[in-house]
Length: 486
Image 1 (cartoon, one colour):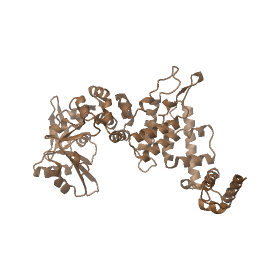
Image 2: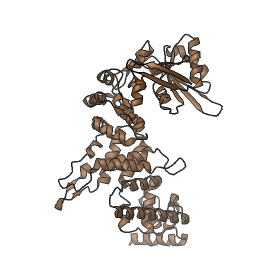
Image 3: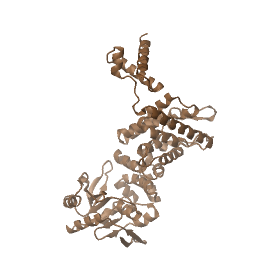
Image 4: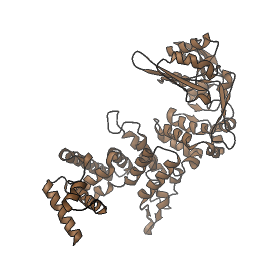
């Protein structure tokens, strides 16, 4: 345990650390070779916040080729050098209880972008204080020298941390010009830490939002992902929109802020989306449930489920407003945006399909489905079934208690029917009662489109009727084929 006081020029801040023994050991190893080593950034912030962390970031006066042998000796369970060109090497060791402690060490440095570059240039620095001055925010510009345990806080980060404020160590204009991604990081920290952006810093983000255009889509995507997987994704999205950054990186979201018609007869779509996002998060499950929190696919679908509404809004007779086919239009817009942000193809496919299906259940409320329709719902949603149900429930934001009760009861009933049907038949392997080879043999036809049409018919028959005896399926196949030949 370390207790110390650091005077930051304005006030004295008392800090209380319990330091990882691995950090102390690594510091001694660097000191023995005459190099400085300091724990920096997020791990120091998390120490003050009493947040657990097993990934430790350090900076050092040593160059990578100088500290690589030290790190290899310390990290006897793993070593990596993917960040070598940025001055970063990493290592890992396991504690006796199996806990992995990962460290990354970076030479004192500064990152900066040239006006039209999409990748930062790396320049080595020569002091810890200089390195800290180039960090994104004061709450990340604190350090702890090891092994001596000197707390270094030249910009009042501990004080800002106590106040829940995000402020840049140098002028925000200089900071965001050096690295525009810091503007996205500010929004992400709003979501992760529940902090507010200091007014001067917030104004600079709004003025400089177009600077984010030079940052690669992959780096922007990573910040959006971290924001959505945080404890407060709604706060992050709202900050993204308020800052003007969303207009550059995710324009479909601020576009949801539709002007209300003069009679206020339809919902504010952006506000509705924020409510749906909150509700979807609340419907995620524990680690052993079907949708373990935090679930990126569900959260993206909640955020994007209505992005087709601005394109499909129509003012109808009598002052009504419609959004016909906004599900299909939204699915196309979702696919396009997520591809532009370089999300993995399975995320693109799954989220766009959830957007496409998010209205599918609504017909059940008016008239309960047949078993055939229930089977089709489960088959069409496939592995997204549990997420789709949660998105559907989250989307039911009516303030009318009677309507809300009817909707929830209908969803409960449908889910129970699915469980009952699954006890009788294997929903995960629904296929025709005769396969392609048997179709060709029974009908005496060669491979070709006709086999495909027969297979499709028999699949529809299976969905309509459930599993049937083999001779019944054969009879239906022959009946259908005879009809086609007539």
